[in-house]
Image 1 (cartoon, one colour):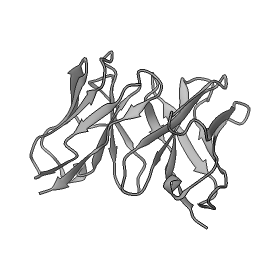
Image 2 (cartoon, rainbow over the protein chains, first blue to last red; image 1 turned 45 degrees about the vertical axis):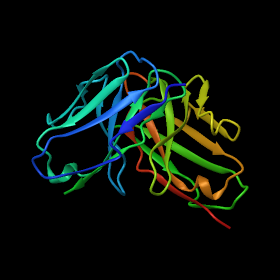
Image 3 (cartoon, one colour; image 1 turned 120 degrees about the vertical axis):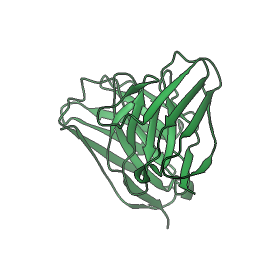
Length: 107
Length: 118
């Protein structure tokens, strides 16, 4: 089974900052990671799949990268609506697994 | 427009079985990969519960496998979650989700809040 370790668990940032979130897989995966944004009371929002392919309607300030075991979500020029919790997902093999989540808070 | 809608009881007693339905509209359940259930307990992260193919073949989380069954009804374009022997630890928002090009999920339901309490 593939475990996803996500870091940091929380980060405090200001509007306009760049935020980087990392997920490390317990074994090499073939570059297929998805990222989600979760806000209280709302359905999770699909941001990125296949490492860096952006979902339609997702602003370009969200980008993904990585290979092997290490994958990154970068949010450039943080906007007020970006304060939320972010999760990675490895969908390559069952059982599927999420990272533990990163809370992006307002500094 | 692709929509998923969860339905089921909001309150269930300990030791009972939770049954949830996910109704899919705007997309055929026979067209995708695996359709999934995910949950989020209060104050915690997302947890994958399991996924089902339209053929009926299903995969489950190892930690829940002994208690979970996921079924699909292609004639109704729906899939279902049954979770047995409930405890307070099963209190969560339960989401159903549509597969993207692979087994990640691009469209989620709004979520069904389930409380396990006597």
